Image 1: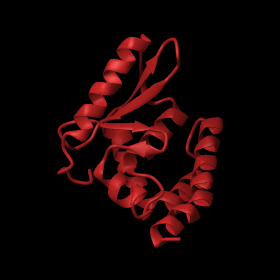
Image 2 (image 1 turned 90 degrees about the vertical axis):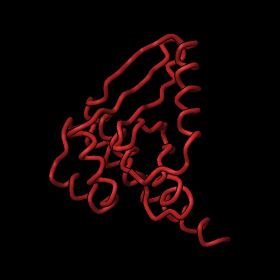
Image 3 (image 1 turned 60 degrees about the vertical axis):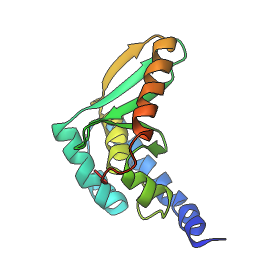
Image 4 (image 1 turned 135 degrees about the vertical axis):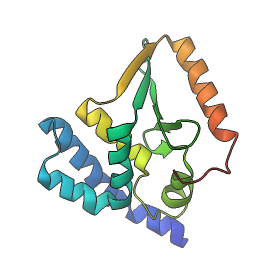
Length: 152
């Protein structure tokens, strides 16, 4: 097994722990001191950026009314929002630090989505399924046009 595969497979328990913390936050409706410490332990680098996103920017959930499918657009410091779905973000940090080398469990955009959903902070936009498919395709196309961006 290659080193990157080992790192990714060994991250699974930590990712499950992170998901359990986010679930607890959702159940409690707030971030307790204990959960804040756990988030810091599990996702320190992402937590700082995710907090800034939640404080200053917007997490937008685009949901198809009939199918219930959804994706997220997360505001960023770059010129365009990042596309995020569970387990994926279009940002450079996800490509380089989460997916490739497993240096991080999640990027700041993924964590911002998780926390925004848990705390009811995401802005929801419901559209019909055909519009959803068009918006997703457009969002995807905009993300794949430029891989020269920074890790914001």
